[in-house]
Amino acid sequence: MNPLLKEITSQWHIMRIIRLMIGIMIIAQAFAGRNVMVGILGVIFTAMALFNVGCCGSNGCIPNKKSTNNPNEFTYEEVV
Image (cartoon, rainbow, N blue to C red; front, side):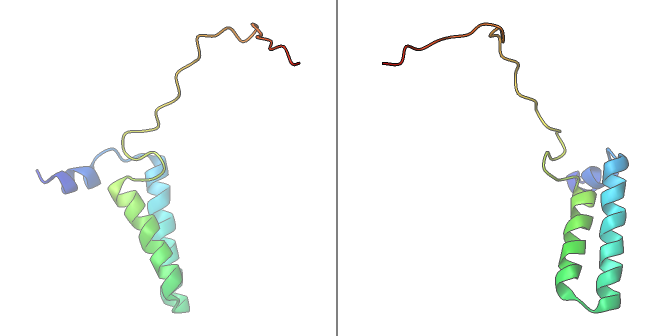
């Protein structure tokens, strides 16, 4: 199967569906108002939904590792 087609047809979740609906609504408003810039925004939202990209992409966000330092321990520096 083509990797692009596989990316488009897999891993659909609620946020991806919402982005697709918003993108389609923005494109419809762009046609109704004959506004090219709004149409570009709609295409961006629709492409984000179709290709499953965004701030974290298709792999998800990787959280930072927790610090092994005890938060109750304090270090002091002598200020002269």
